[in-house]
Image (tube, rainbow, N blue to C red; front, side, top):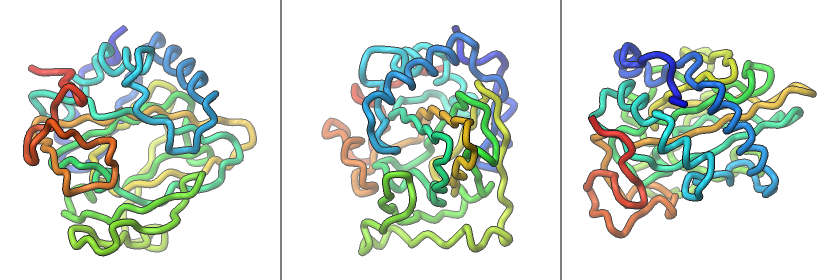
Length: 261
């Protein structure tokens, strides 16, 4: 039932340099089938695109996957970390005809965490440029920029900035208009492939322009051993923890350590 079929430590140097790597065939058929079924059950809630999150707090397949699959060790190996803590999980389902592009953004400025975070994004369907592949600007995680969070519409399109007067943030450049000025990468994924990427890497996701092909993705966010609680950053109050002091390792009962060497 383990998540990984191969070791991933050999990806550590590439991850440090690029801020994103792909792990082929990461999931066993057992976990792939279980997560697909769990996603279908969750979709019955009828929520907006970004609202399917933190399912791991309830007993069931999502929680079992996060705690028992070995994904925490995979993340620690890629990130060169002595431990990993579980922050939250999230699912992203782009149905056929969902043409809205998820705007260019970075994740971590939304969250009260300083230091390294890795997201694992797992393809539950075949993914390519036609049905919503993720795009990244490699190396952008190391630019030292904290791009301003923004709100989105029902399908993930940009609406407006938040924290407009907070000097720790800068506005996001129009990376779509600047595409030819950057190295932009994307991978075609098979079901069970996994992307691991840094919380500060600039990324986007294409729309689903197909008429019949779904794009189901399941993401889990992890803190590494240098991740620290920073309640002055972010807009996600549900990721705050009054039991943590500012600067403390981002580990608590709410955000449990799930792997340690």
